[in-house]
Amino acid sequence: MAPFITDEEESIPLTFEDVLPEPVSQPLPTQTSTHEKRHQIALIIDDVGYDLKALRRLLALPFPLTVSILPDAPYAKQAAQMAYQHGVPVMLHMPMQTANPKYTNKMEAFYLHAAMNKAIFTQVFEDALTKVPHVVGINNHMGSALTANTQAMQWLMELCKKHGLFFIDSRTSPSSVAASVARKSGIAWNARDIFLDHSLEANALQQAWKSALSCARKSDTCIMLAHPHSETLVFLEQRIEPENYPYFIAVTSTLQTSN
Image (cartoon, rainbow, N blue to C red; front, side, top):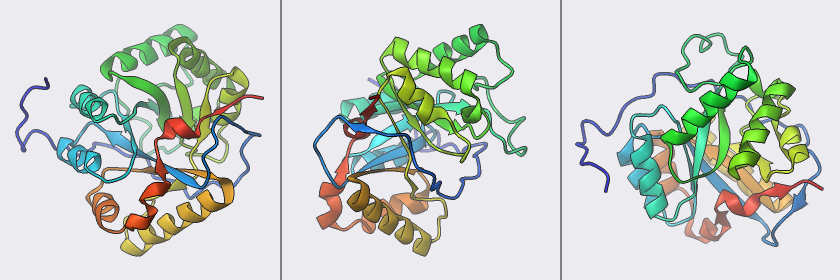
């Protein structure tokens, strides 16, 4: 059972956050569906592990979601246990090198970057994985620089294969090769389609949600990333119409395999 945490302790602000890019419109690699479901949305909540009150609100939502937990978050283990006990899939939100100079020198210990050799790269990944129990897949936190590095992505997919993990490309850069390398590696994979909270303005959130519905109707499934911001939580609690609840599925139901 997780130790008791006071309200004052359980909500810690993030110390850094990459600037979210505009949606990427480039086509993804050819996909082979592993399921028969159509017109559905997989919601992944990134940056989990800093605010357990927010996580409780997320777990109380009346539709499925997936959580992706930062390995150096102060409540990473507790968050993973909470999600797992609620039957919610747990992902590792793996920090990776960003092209944004504002954050280049602000990354923490669990941070993959291009200057690492394979041994160090592997050790950092393995150490991060030990911090988040019940992980079934990973996606990149930041990573606009590293996901464009083919060698690094090959190492990453080897590690995913070793641990039986799927990979979701957060697509923080139009230059990302991560989804292509994942597909070629033979692991289960997919990629982000929509950022729900690229902007926290109410009208922008509503427009992003409409884009997700349109994406799902056109492409059968849509992967939508969001974050545990207060504005996002309110939107998910109050602005998703009950008739749209059946659209939601866990990201594990959207995974693709190589041809």
